[in-house]
Amino acid sequence: MTSSSIPSNAVHICVDMQRMFMPPNPWAVGWFPETLPKVIELVQRKPASTIFTRFIPARRPGEGQGQWRDYYCHWADMTLERAGREIVDLAPELQAFVPPARLFDKFVYSPWFDGSLQRALVAEAVDTVIVSGGEADMCVLATLLGAIDFGYRTILVEDAICSTSDEAYDNIVKLFSDRYSQQVEVTSVEAVLEFWR
Image 1 (cartoon, rainbow, N blue to C red):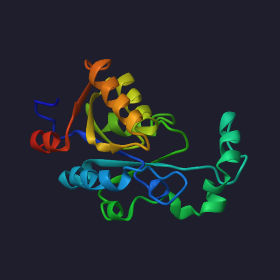
Image 2: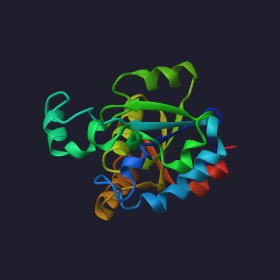
Image 3: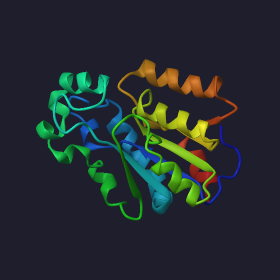
Image 4: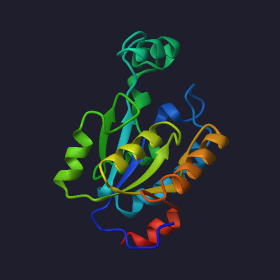
């Protein structure tokens, strides 16, 4: 639980709160509608300190490297060619925050893979990241592990992340509360708003 001040230059990384993960899409995250208001509360605190990541699927079935080719054959209806480019857009309620919030696109689960996010945070002397969004056991997990590897003070906002599975959500919160307790602070939207001035 966060009980100390969050520096003014902290960055809120909001993971993949996009149309493709909203019901009734095939990749819909069940908790998305309930989580969205909490995410909005965080974004409203400091829109200019928010980075939205967006997962960008393959253009057409069979594209991608290695296992991703099979993945997009299986999920052919979620490729850009079939689903339409608009599926990568943020949830409508979040689009108005960009700008000043920024977008970072990625083609895999981790936002750290191509180095652009890390370069931006280093250039801004950021040492603290606050993580929200979805999906808890996929892209949020990859975001957290990268932040740990780069040595950031990492804050997971447990009531502002979502998953398709209650069990997966509970396991992720427990994992970072227990196993990673020296590297990740698991806290609430209320606490972030109190300590991030």
